[in-house]
Amino acid sequence: MTKLKVLFIDSTHPILIALLTNAGFECESGTKMSRIEIEKIINNYDGVIIRSRITLDRQLIDIAKNLKFIARVGAGLESIDVEYAEQKGITCFNSPEGNRDAVGEHALGMLLCLFNNLVRANYEVKNGIWKREENRGLEIKGKTVGIIGYGNMGGAFARRLKGFDANVIAYDKYKTNYSDDYVQENSLEELFENADILSLHVPLTDETKFMVDNEFINKFKKNIYLINTARGMVVKTNDLVKNLENGKILGAGIDVLEYEKTSFEELHKNELPETFKKLIANDKVILSPHIAGWTVESNIKLSKFLAEKIIEKFKG
Image 1 (spheres, rainbow, N blue to C red):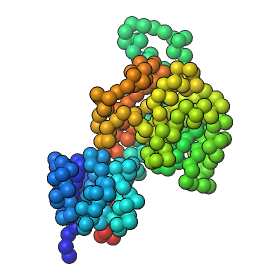
Image 2: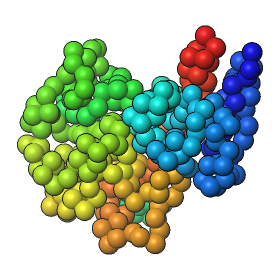
Image 3: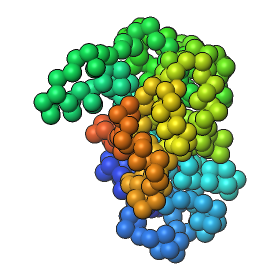
Image 4: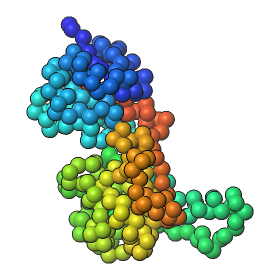
């Protein structure tokens, strides 16, 4: 039986190559190739493994005439034209199960840092400043945490809130009857009415791009804390900064920024607006460089789950 040939466009944990090779796939590296170089050879492959370096758009999919699958190491599929690929009979895989635990923990960590002023207090003490009253914190217990998007990531965050005695509610436009031991299903209107904290766990789509803008933020009855570990362009940064300044948003934990390059490895450094400078200068904001799902453990699990899905589909 002919081996299925797989091109690795992005680097991954070695376990992915090992598992696929052991299952009878022929794996080759294209991690150093440019898009133009990939275009010249992609029709020789049955599958490709990507992260975010190259977009599998219609043009590239049309060239890849023998492609049977596209597999992304990660949760988001915005670097693949999924609808067009599936029309062509190409299966699209991702592995959100692999980093959901990491994202859940990171979101909780950001919330705890915000509520207890840990970033500011750490800086002050290290600089000989001892302020107790000014750094008096808040407790999660008794607060209402609103989650938008109750999939792998939203569910992982909810599970980690279980021991805090918070009221956890969630809205997911594409799901129903998902109330469980960790969350209560709510309408978006109920979330606007009751949430003290908003945590975003939605993919980036045409529907969610800049979903959280000034109008959206001001639908909340209360002043809120915002956590975004989803995608940067879900939140309109200009409007985030405006509402931080006027107090509608009491604090923000932001792991993702709209100014990230497509590969998420760095920012568009020469294109950062004045708004970004205001964001990083605001001590009510804590930032991290798109690492919510970026742990030692998730690095392995992302590849392991992806390999299992590919093997089950083509070798099961």
